[in-house]
Image 1 (cartoon, rainbow, N blue to C red):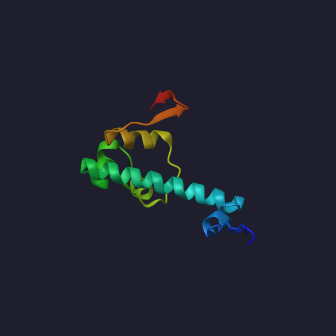
Image 2: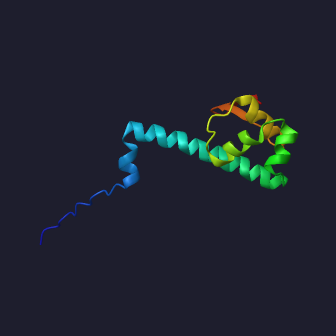
Image 3: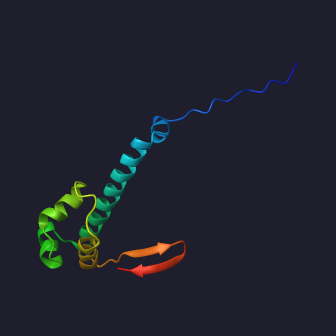
Length: 105
């Protein structure tokens, strides 16, 4: 008997196929970033036990803006707004390139 090699088909997921489309990839990346920011703000608020209203007062940021960030509608807040929220929530923003920390905001 001859040794037969089986050809294994590489199954690509729908996600893998879609990510090859540049327009889809760009939209996905933008929405993923908004989701990540939203989840981070929600987690920080929960850990500090702060409501949107209380965070708004303490950070001097509109409660509407905070709610839009939490819901993912506001996916591109200014660094000033993000910095106010993060600092009020007891965290910090770190800008790195590779292993080198360039700034703490």
